[in-house]
Length: 229
Ligand code: ADP
Ligand code: ADP
Image (tube, rainbow, N blue to C red; front, side):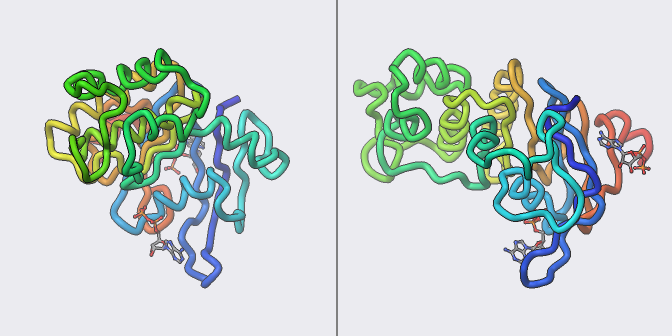
């Protein structure tokens, strides 16, 4: 049984805009699935539905085989690490940003996730360690570093599935590469569902699902998609 399964999901926003039609995909435990497609295809909406922000208007979403409508929202959310597009970072310190997700985490746990996302070097550069500010005062983290901090924050709660919305949208090529390494490390012991409009971000996914106009128009590995196009 896959960790996450969408069966024939359709969705219209309350204003009547039909956004998804007959979308089926599955994310087996430990796998990396990418959702790609042009802007407006409905990619972010898929993640929002998995998070439970809106009720489905058709189809089923299952978590480990159970219809999510039968699961307490909090129980499902505890298994998900959702990093929205342009994820906000607090204008506080690195430590404060991380403690948002896991208020009781000790410094060892905080350093461990920072190592996962390749940020220990940045924080150690500051004499103040984890108290390096993230916001607009004092020492700054770059856009890519902030994005990786947002991912670190979601990793702290040890989600079974990481949902990432356009994690590389605002990154230059170097930071995009660093982020791909981060995702590879994060995927070592959890599943990933990553939304991207650039295929370059998700080349090494186990499955790439191409969405256009709210419908799945292709799916396969990168090699398979290139062969058939
Ligand atoms: P096509 O996309 O040409 O219809 P596929 O072989 O990709 O053919 O898929 C056939 C059907 O199987 C699709 O309608 C889809 O609902 C389902 N399907 C394919 N792959 C998956 C998957 N990974 N998870 C869930 N359903 C899938
Ligand atoms: P993508 O992530 O692929 O760019 P989205 O899921 O953000 O696509 O959006 C899909 C479609 O849904 C777009 O046409 C968008 O304008 C529309 N949409 C997104 N959010 C809302 C909303 N809250 N109310 C109505 N329509 C929306």
